Length: 77
Image (cartoon, rainbow, N blue to C red; front, top):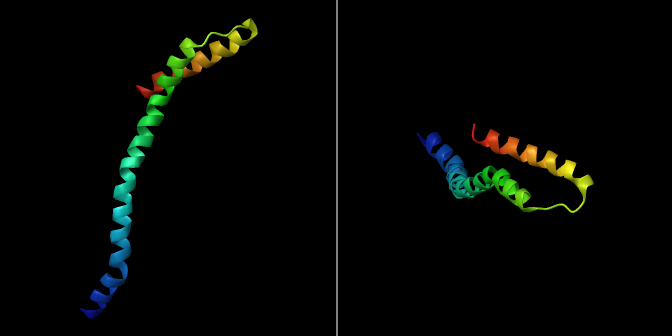
């Protein structure tokens, strides 16, 4: 019995601290996940508003547009 109590006293505190820190980090991770999931949509909306003055850059715009549409479609899967 004494060995169990010493084991709990040695290991219990780090376990409690670990659970507390995981609990605090969980909310922050949820925010990061939401931001990453909404990123393609925000980039897609910003790309629609950009007007390139040079025709040679239009190909890049078309590629980026297609890539963002693909990423946005993959998010909804």
